[in-house]
Length: 427
Image (cartoon, rainbow, N blue to C red; front, side, top):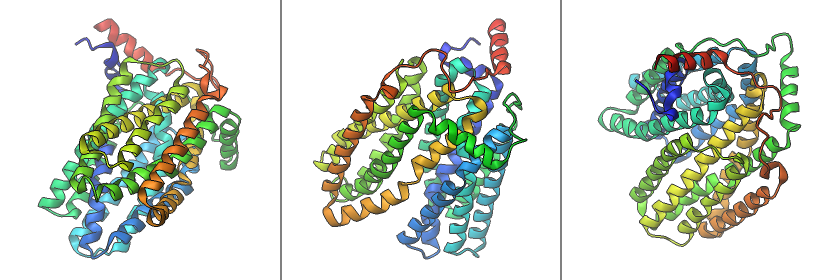
């Protein structure tokens, strides 16, 4: 069957395996995210324990993400992804077994969250690099759009699945379901081809690998400028949405209204996948910076107690903006950074983006408590406008990339390209 041009990547078996594997991974992640608070409540814990568990999951991610970047460049990325997926399968199975067996305490789930965070530190930079192993360079934006479309669709289905399991059975069974989804992901990802085309770093030390990654990261202004903006975004806008939003909703649209807002944000994230399948902007970094200004209407809708219809429209725009920005950024990194350096550069991206997020959540929570939620959201919106308009004025962000520019030579995944050509001939 002849597929539309936007979907021709689905002909490549390696990309199909990666796409389906990511669907299973996203289902596993969202299922346990919903189950975790209810699991803690079932053990006699409270909201403070939930906060501790979620915070503990972030700390090892920050600590180990640079080593995850080295692993993603030093070893075959497929192997790294398989190993971490199998480890996460064991974590979720252990959590489910302990909960169902009645021997769990809150501390058990906190320890499992810590292990989960450590594993995700190896997954995040590897995922950025592995797309180069399953998609040709000139199809990277479509590849990322398809992956984001599939994962965001799973992110909508995951909470519903978890809610049904928790309501009809128990949080322990939701952990088991998450473990099964991770196991399915491992089985599917195993079908991806082994790729050994990257420059091997086995003869160098871990310290040298980290230094090489830092050299590319710090020596490329457009990379560290964008990452600095992401750090501020994670430390201000994300707490404003997920701490300030519920605080406003409690006195306006209520819990059900806020749940609808979050669902609409997920739908907006799905729409982005369709948008970017057909459109590739010439100035991706400029668009990625400016489009995030669409978060401001969402902040203003919260500040001025907008009705639910207006709030939903603003939330949809905000989610579209975030996901367009993320997709363009990931694609630009993959196109402009050499494959054998990509996971390390991505690890510095994740480190910079996440490092200030816990502090941002803490400080914004205090700010809201003492100065009022609307004052805090207005200040975040104003800061956001200054940052992203200012970035759009920088030549490193504003100018288009030359067609073949890269920080180092980018190697073409010839096996994938050949597979697509052969399939095209058969069609």
